[in-house]
Image (cartoon, rainbow, N blue to C red; front, top):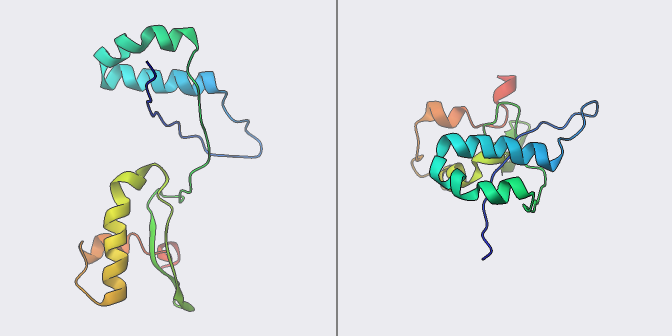
Amino acid sequence: GERWFVGASYQPVHADEPEWPDDKNHGANALRLEKLAPELFASLTPELESGALQAWKGQRCVTGDRMPLVGPVSAALPDVWVCAGFGSRGLSLVALCAELLAAQWSGRPWPLPYSLAYSLIPCRKRL
């Protein structure tokens, strides 16, 4: 039957560098799968080798340091807030960042230490 698997390649988009073809991305994901789950890799080898995989691809919003942006955009724009830039970490960080954002708006205690929250503020590069 049909099965859905998700494997993410991570390739920066540069004007002078062509995008990798799907077979190269599939191969890189297969190598990671072989290391992480050898039994699953072995069971999928016929499908991987047949080239029957279908691909969906798009771009993810990611920051230069791969940490999300959470909080006011800048001191000059205190009413403009952002919660974005999750890239491939969205599933693991979005709930915590939403809690942090809600705590900032409501004045409640933050769900993580200030030192960690500070690494998420949008203007961190300029400080």
